[in-house]
Amino acid sequence: MTLQRYSITDRPLDVTEVISLVEDRNAGAINTFIGTVREMTKGKRTIYLKYDAYVPMAEKKLAQIGDEITSRFPDARVAISHRTGELGISDIAVVIAVSTPHRADSFEACRYAIERIKEIVPIWKKEHWEDGTEWIGDQRETKAYPAGKPGKENLS
Image 1 (cartoon, rainbow, N blue to C red):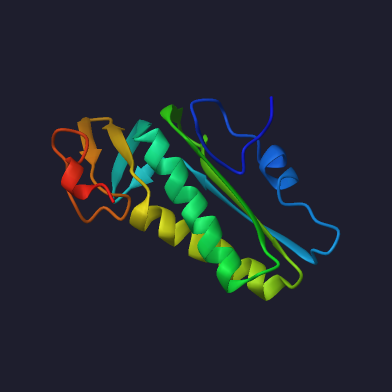
Image 2 (image 1 turned 180 degrees about the horizontal axis):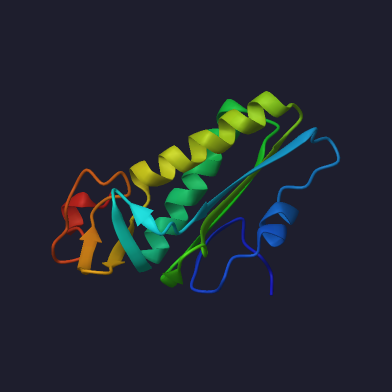
């Protein structure tokens, strides 16, 4: 199976596979961000999460983030994979890998990627707490989507 640099998948994420997509003999740094499911959030115990996404749009937005990074850091190579489905505590939800010739650019680009994912990528999560469930709106948690997903007016 050919790996895509920007993907949404219901399969467990393999950090090594994502890193392999950005390896470059001229890279002096490969920075990774690995987002995992935590047990405690604002004093509430999470049992598991369920991620859902509008996959075609989400993959386009991940590619857009990669383009934004390479416009800022022309020698950067970027790969981003995000998981959907049911994830348990400590499971990997997202892997971002960025290689650049110099480490400072790699750190900055990786941070930029996760902030932009939360800002523009249509991915939603349902928290399954020990005392109930709740759909979380946008990834910055600034909107509530009681029905589970935003309407078309929120997809951009």
